[in-house]
Length: 327
Ligand code: PEP
Ligand code: MG
Image 1 (cartoon, helix red, strand yellow):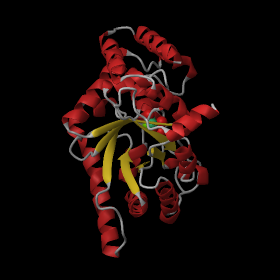
Image 2: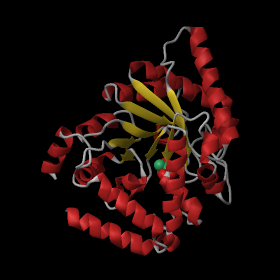
Image 3: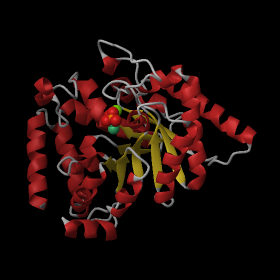
Image 4: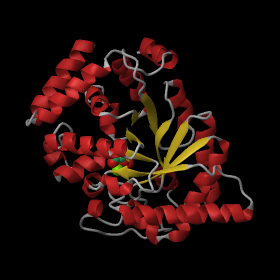
């Protein structure tokens, strides 16, 4: 383990035949950026901002959010820090008197993430200003969770423009070139990904939700966990569609769901054309090892096999064989 960590720190993340793959960290607090950097992160691919709310058990102020984002951005020393706007609802609930708890029979299909933020302008603008202000201390990026279509994306970007104007008017510095992108984690966004190119500087695929919605399998329900199948042919094809759409629009695409940190899945994801993988920091060394010990051509063969195979368990078997041959 120690040797792998040493190796991860020093070497760059490239395939054996020289194709660079950015390995990024998923974090929930600003101070986690330091550990992520030690473990070899090329940046932060997902800062789950809702944890600032859930951990505090109340609404954090703009200042508190700014401090957390600034800390991550500074620690990353110019590497990108992708901050996801508030994704409360679904599995992420905040128990607080500051905010009503919505009782819903289908929380995963309900009032969560961008749906909630677009309805709470003041709260959303506060968060966007906090991110923008942090962007003047390094490289921050913004991503919107649970985008289902172009209208939500354009409304989110309008709010971002409004937050920028407020800061300009107040003479507060921020990165005018800051990038904003859509998370692709709802099937409608995947199918119509081309309609999200306008308004997205990048796509980030949230496979945890995407798989749950695509296969209609609650990601938290043990009874149906065996049906939650990341190698399901529909998942493989959907990933390919998203990546093709991103390529056609000349924007980057990253994956920030759990599969991105699974060394068995990584060759498939890279072979499909993903350039950035974001994962829990502790998984970085292992994934880096796999990336460094495979060729892009091998990954492409695996992706081709997966696109042609009709049985998800067979795809998984092939992935496991490949992984075992590398360890
Ligand atoms: C995802 O859905 O894959 C994702 C990265 O976001 P979260 O797990 O926080 O919903
Ligand atoms: Mg998600």
